[in-house]
Image (cartoon, rainbow, N blue to C red; front, side, top):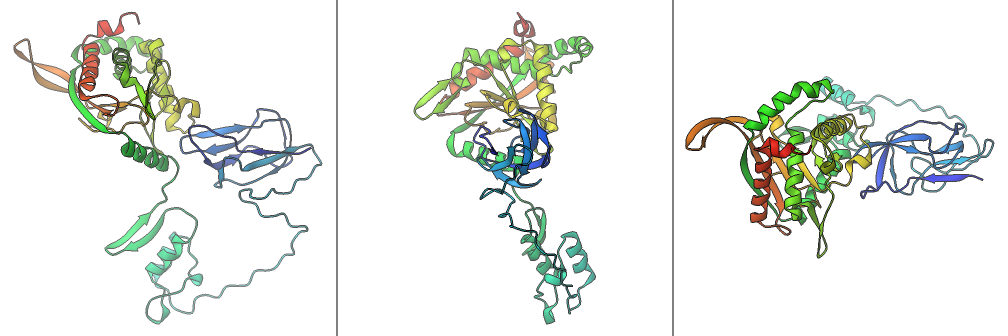
Length: 396
């Protein structure tokens, strides 16, 4: 009895994926839960396990094909069974009843008009067959614009085309970049976003971190400022719980768990892996987990479970040299904290001017849920904890 294995619901509203590669082939014997293919969603590359043991009778689709939830991935049965392609399977036409006869392709004549070397080079770069391009130039001559237009009709990918002022490259909006565009557009359309900015004096914290770096390195941990800031955020969220909430229709849903998203710059685009249950972790444990999920995000080996369940997000703009920003809320969360570049600044301390290490912070929040006063109190809570490392680390 054959079984058609269909793409299951991957959660988080993901309805389509792209086949990266098959890990099995027709005729292979597989076990239940054995990975059979890799898929790239808008968030991560995931391995899909087989729901049952058996023989792979037929796989449908190949690397690069787009598939949707409910599409058949493969047929599983017993050796010797046969399976025809089900209707609507990605990358498959109806199976022919017999092998088609081989028909030698006709030779395509070279274009009868001359093609300038620059045009021919462009056609080679874009993989366009100039013999199939209709020329629009004088005497039917093929132009660069003709080649560019022919390229845009091919499979989606980077293409060169021409606008009024010159040549441009067009690239499809897909994968992580498309997911970012969709989610941030939804965030800006839905949440009423306001940003509160302030400075935090992290002079004492910098000294404490420097003292602890050697011990952290012995444990194989890179100790940055981020774990301390994440811990301070959780303490502030406990003090002002509405910042750890989301809006569901006419209900404000206040989360009583603390999962902090960490925005990570990756070659594929911005990803936000989540450090779970931060309130139960030590600074060293937070640092280790941040490093783990960040590296998995950069290599696209992150699992969907590590990208889900966030209640509040932190983004480190300062690592790239920024000061203040207006980060976009990771909707449907209520707020996001942007971190600027720590710099030495002259500030008044007890009536005297001193050089202190100052951290710029930018809190974007949903004004539908909290007011500016709550946002200011939240940032003040973060400041209080970061400016007194002993109190921050008490009990941890």
